[in-house]
Image 1: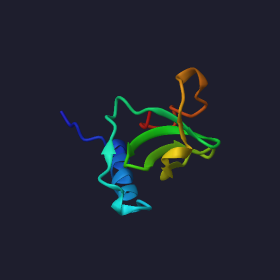
Image 2: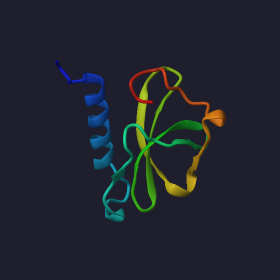
Image 3: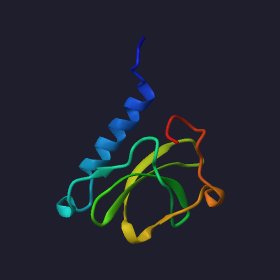
Image 4: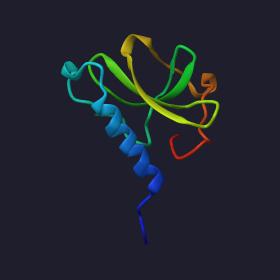
Amino acid sequence: MNKFDADNNKILMAIIDAETRHPKPSDGPTKRFPIWNKPLVKVNTIYGHAFGYTHSYGLIGWWDNTGKHHMEWFPADLIQRVKRADWNGTDNEGPIS
């Protein structure tokens, strides 16, 4: 049985790439959320998932309206957790959910 999942590998590579672009490297090590427990979040008008965090930043992944996936750091004070009923993001564009 082949347990290699190319899509999940792409996600991991996107996370690693984003970690190298942290806006404040001295903010401490990145703590990642488990794949099965990523909080639903909102940053301004963007709905996404929190993949990790440092002391003052959160790593957020989301799909735009063209189907492209983004993974970027945002200051913690801009990130709001939202309940699933209030979340307007996309779960069905790929393996990130």
